Length: 250
Image 1 (spheres, rainbow, N blue to C red):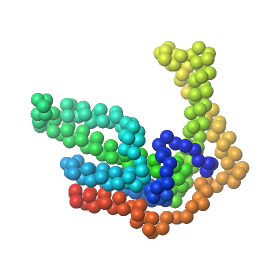
Image 2: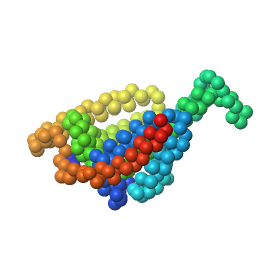
Image 3: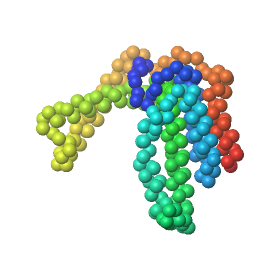
Image 4: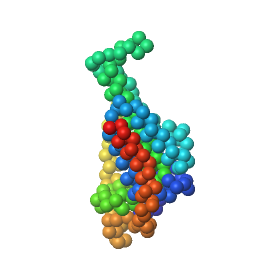
């Protein structure tokens, strides 16, 4: 279960950020996002400082901005929604290039875009510098409930297996004349999803029995040492800067 596997969001490297204890990075990321969310939307300068602090972490971790920008496109639907707010919201309006836009809508859209983007970038930074296995170990060291750890471990371990099973089933359907592009074949697609669920459930039962027979106790093996005071101080330094910015902004 502790065997590692590649993940599209992880960027291997040997930097101080990569070597940092995973529990420290998890706490720093969560605390940083809380600082961003708690900042009043009218404090435009504060969000620029948050981005500067995050950029410093990227420099230490040697993460190219382009690599992050490609993966940050996941928030595109929320950005589209935010751009619609100035046209749909009511209240006082202001003229921008001859177009009347709602002041409340502009602030609401800005709030969604800036906080959502910073939150996504923090999450991508954590994922880029921490493998999925390290994240599980970090959560375990933070005393996250054992059941949550077990579910997350199995999900990470067998997500690729289930995806491969789905691809094989899709190829088998296509070889038999099924084309998922046709609307009238949606019934076959739905039945295929049900079959995939049953196969995944059966595979999970077999995996659980195999784990129990090999001495599984419900916890991931952790051969590492807990983070010391110096590691916590160094890892939480960017979060401390973000907390200072939040204190000034409030």
